[in-house]
Length: 264
Image (tube, rainbow, N blue to C red; front, top):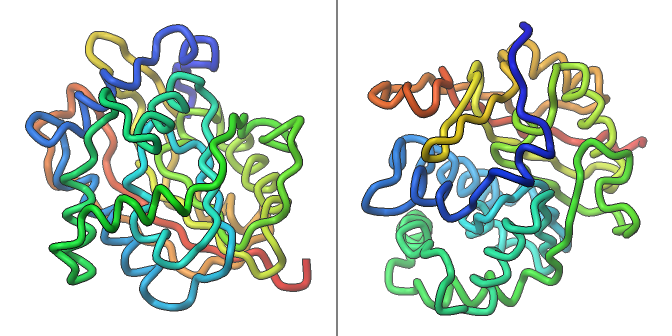
């Protein structure tokens, strides 16, 4: 499907992470807050608590300004690398890591994950554990063969990405090619976990409209197979809350858990 697309220069000039946080994540006013974020956090909790995905190093690629997607991962991995394309997003991540007075407040997400883990009283311990586990915050461009160029990062045990590729890739071919490049970031047998929106065309950050790749479950599955992964799980959950289609028009949320074959 041909759609309008917001390229990298538009994001550099117009994407404001604080406005994005207020629009989607702020605990008192974030749109689609409960449904979208809770599904993402539950999926990560189930995967990382299963014992199937483990190792030393995890890369979060295209993390944006968020840290909530790593709250379960820090229980499994000892070396987490956070990356994003936009300097303004990396600045917000660094503020949270250093407990800057103007950092974004992710407390409600920390509480949600602690409740999932049965550790409701350990919010500060969870935050400090994640801060200690994040070893690097680096710039990335997922459209490059080496997204971290000029850095060369040793292959990781796991790579995660949330709500990233649909904003970076202008078509399904680019999406598939990016997945192929991601394989070089993983050890043989390494895991990739991606969560994002299916069949969306745009989202708003205040008055600014960003267009994104429209992709279906069938296209996602085909892209992962063509990129050479073994799919462990591909789950799509229909959107229930349709009250704010005016600011984000996706149909469903998807979660893919796949592996790089051990022979590669």
